[in-house]
Image (cartoon, rainbow, N blue to C red; front, side, top):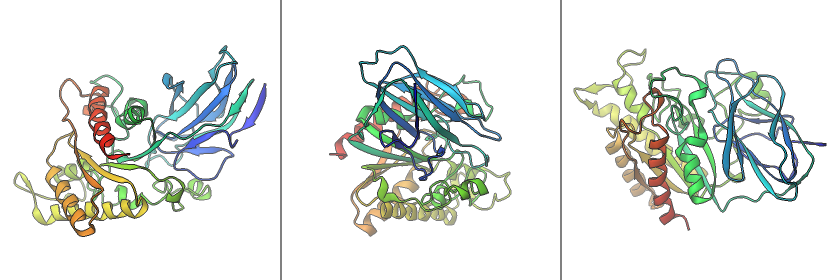
Length: 361
């Protein structure tokens, strides 16, 4: 056996991360490392430090998920495969299944070394690059587990059962995800104006602003030139809507209802935040199609999103943006925690992939 460091130029890293390779640190859901090798055996030295929410990974071999598992907090050699034909090329992806947890200052996936009896070969990029921005829906909360499950735990998250992963498969695309459960465009579900995606979008992973992440560069600005997507799909608004209806939180007056409707002056705050976010996404992704996908957990915010898009497109003359209506959740497609289940994610993926096929050339 020979041992290679994780920073080999023949290892593909698809993640918003830093240049640190001792260890390689992954935070966002769907982040992955990919290997091409001719070998009979492969092991990886990994760790999944956490305080509250453990790490889960998926192992994909030759394009199919063969395993999901929880990781130890400490370094541990994980056997990825053995007894394979060393004359045949094997493609492997190790995928972070769970999101970055803003409430867990220690949560991260660490990769240190690999051990194999074969030779690594170069991994080429897929022909398409896609970025997905969102909340718990995009983080794939509840898409695994029984419908009766209501605990907020890491094991109920699963990127490889999510619509971003499925769209990537349908379009042969590399996918990156920037999402956080409960967060919105103007406010989170519990009326917190700080827990919003636009505030952190230009950082590497600055939502966990601890000394550890500061020391490893995660609070630095992300260099968007390193990875330019062909399309950016935004799925935000569900938690902004939730903030309007949440009358029990400390900032319940942040977004207010007027009868059955949003109070107009507060609705405009959300709309304007959406317009500002569209401008921010465009600034950093100048050539990407921007699609705002919405509707799986209700469509009350739909008219506000459409209005934001209309104003943005009119003011900027940017016609490379649009709205994607998602199929609404049903009793047959619901998963754990009253969130979209795997069936719902399949339906969303089908709609988004069909839309993108007509746009991405």
